[in-house]
Image (tube, rainbow, N blue to C red; front, side, top):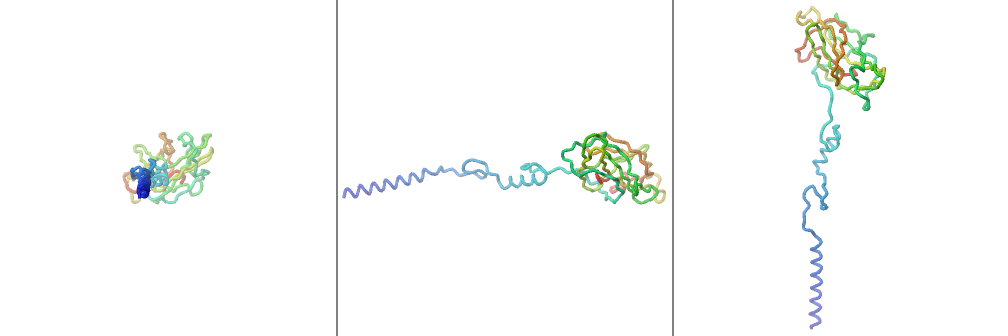
Length: 237
């Protein structure tokens, strides 16, 4: 009888030891949202979405930012115009920017590139930009372009076209187009007769300009119009 009681006590003690071992295996801590049991941070769904959006939009992964775009919408509708020759390529991430002094400026004059300034219909004049430097350079966007007469400097609006990056090796050329409405006596008033003398050109991201003599007659002044018939295309068009 005493032996049986001793065995019962021993079994009870052994079971109690197992219960204590099971309890000591748990710390009692609960992992906080966004953290693992080891304490390492786990990206949340929102953080992953932000990283994907940033990378796909052109910004660095995880920034959530978007890539920048160049060029603005001037509200004008571009029309097809004359084309000048170009040897430029639409790439050049490693090229330096084309500075004003890196370029030569001229009008395209071959074939149908010469506007008919006697017409009352919209005309196109193409400006050729040639890399006259000894190094490769690139441009992206719209030039700043003003038409000037004896008393007014008229900043021209931009088309809605999206610009591309143009790379010019030494001797290569690209272009942009000036679309304009000639002034004619029929249906117009003398106060809208803009006797242009100069086209002032500032390449994209530059602060100095080049004066190119205007050769295509008088232009219908629309400097206050919401959708003027005189506007410019981006570099490369």
